[in-house]
Amino acid sequence: MTTKLVLPKWGMGIDEGTVARWLKGEGERVLEGEPIVEIETAKATQEVQSPASGTLVKIIVAQGETAPVNTEIAVIEEE
Image (cartoon, rainbow, N blue to C red; front, side, top):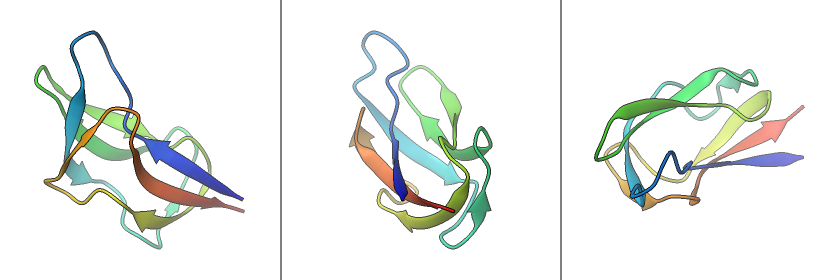
């Protein structure tokens, strides 16, 4: 089963975010609740936690790219 990692909406007026840094790479194991990526918005840089345990199988939004909130940015394959 796969789980989508989406760019969260942290507050009013936040419509997009930029991937500042991936903390895990494709093929790496992640644990639910573990920080997986840093997202920079107009107001702050925040870590996004993994919604599930498994393997990060695909990064959709690369480091330095900007995406709207609620956009799928990665895929985790659960065990």
